[in-house]
Length: 120
Image 1 (cartoon, rainbow, N blue to C red):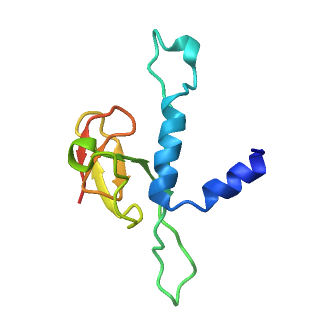
Image 2 (image 1 turned 135 degrees about the vertical axis):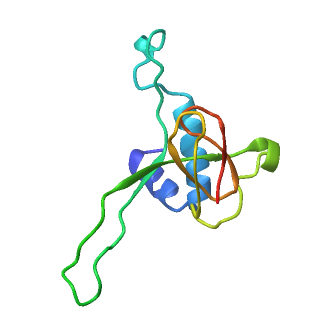
Image 3 (image 1 turned 60 degrees about the horizontal axis):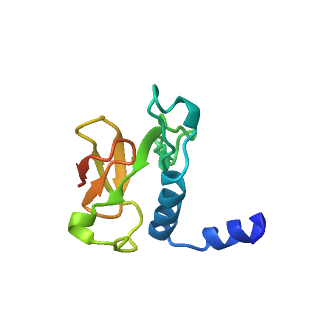
């Protein structure tokens, strides 16, 4: 499959399926494999968001960007399911590494350290 076809195929996936596929790819790759013995490193999927802070009658003003890692559904709660097609509407914070997290389910695994994350 050519790169363009791959991009088109991935672009058609619902966000939950896209996240699951990219997680599998990231799990098999390291950004700095030669440094793994002295520097833990990994790829992870994240989202960036910025809220509109101005009113309709004001000049457009946006807030600071917020970065969050996309947590995977916890298999102890969901098995191999990717969860419902709700988008990444659930949010939380990893109690181990402190990374903000997003998911489509209430019980996730941190994309950075793998710890349990409870979402809103």
